[in-house]
Length: 385
Ligand SMILES: [Zn+2]
Ligand SMILES: [Zn+2]
Image (cartoon, rainbow, N blue to C red; front, side):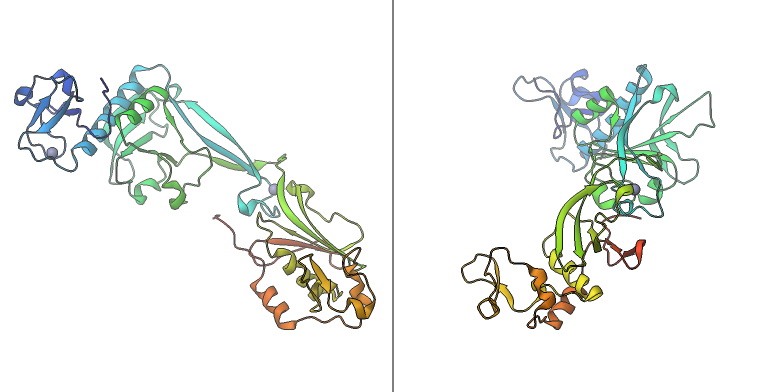
């Protein structure tokens, strides 16, 4: 018979306030049990062979919080039991080691210049005690479980908070204590924790101050050391778009990868290189071309209002190609604009493109200012503090 369910009241309080299994009590109203939420008397339905054994309110009106209260009590009891009875009890979370180059690293602001690994600790090596409903030392709150060392009272304890529908309050979570907040949705969740320890569920890293993303996680760590800025040998290849403007007026734009230490001008003959840290390159080429033109005033057909989409859908053509006696498509050199009398740009369009600007941070390497002169223009960082 299926024993565990999120939706059945399978445990209740007995006459002395102990949590008891429906299979361990007398049948029906003789069970002597009470609802963990409303404290009304219950009957045990523990004789059937078809339906899962469970408790029901004697008065026939089920209350809304019975199962939630049961799960909360059960979590405290089972996890305390597991911690005390086992020789190993593991916690596991994602740990990130970020780039040392806090001042200069262009990828750090996007939380990308880092390497991550799973940290696992057998907390039985550090703690031997676990008690329910113990007040915090520094704030006026109680914790569901406090895991601490009886032999070394100086060691910071770990507090566990279980929630079924309500997350804990922020003052508590950011109080500086080591807190693990655990969402319990079923008895299976509790068994899993008791068996395998407390493992951060999402594989991707979520900052403890990012409340939105954190909501998706069932296990959340607060106050633990989870990152450092000491990684001096990062070899993460990070993707970006590189735009190059040459003195000849030729341009190039392509996807590139490198780590933050090698992010530098790539061509000795380039006049301007713009590295755009983005995964979306739509519309960016046009923007960087305009910026290049603003800066160096080197014409290129791509910017010209006579350079238009062809009717045949074959790509761009110069409206004046017959008159200028130049090829229509093949080997069309857009740098020819430098000597073209008909080069003309739409000032307004250009200004609006530049104003609407790049939505991601970008870095420019200009010949005139030297490679070390780096501009960071508009940026809308994703999520950083
Ligand atoms: Zn009730
Ligand atoms: Zn870096």
